[in-house]
Length: 357
Image (tube, rainbow, N blue to C red):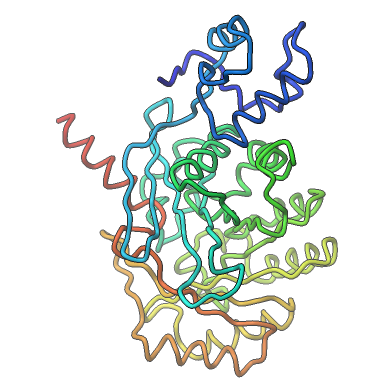
């Protein structure tokens, strides 16, 4: 049972878990229960004294969310709708390795993680922002998605992509402490090279992230080759135009010595023409960046459509002709379970709103 009246223990760094008389080895035991075994109930921590379990139960809540709905697709992608302690909803998506992947990568599992309830940036193609921004997630709510998704999957999660609901860089005060616990060998123990943060282009926050010590990966949601095209679908381009964004990327790369990825959603008749493909290749070469092309996943209530397969391949081939370091076309995952960010949450909210009438 979730309790909004108590502080959430995993919102706090483990060094702040200590009571006056709680030895450090007890903190380590609690960490093992939470991060290794996925236990979010104090009563199940059997190697803790009963009086300590009771004390923890009285003072803290340990469960940041509960499952509201889970959907599985034909390709084994799983989508989770989580109900938070204040009755808001967020989503996570568990994605298996692409069919045909060989070797150790064939069994890898990736979790797409949310960082906000809704989104304030209003990207025109995205369901996450249709209802605006409700609030930022806390550190524990970010960690909880990983802990609970891993428990439901019954296996280790290998990769994390912060590409779910919300703009990750708009919530760095909660996200960076969560990353500390994700990276820690006493926490979730996921390596930095298996973690990717995606941003719509918050220039000052890109430079702030560059100072974070771990070598996590950065992906830029570009979705247009010039200001005119990008502005049609991403209002943030008015605040941080293309040249300013690319300049921040150059500074990030210079500071981190790390290759970044340019994400590009292909939308029929909007940004899928050959001119945009050539511009995208130019930007990728300028930054020595990888390119990830993503055919649009249709959202109910939005006008945008996916290009034809012929147009998708023509766009891809044009980018490849520009000889950027690497070009990938993301294989479609979860199309039959509304896997585009925010769709399941909107559907649940609509059901609840109708029930309240």
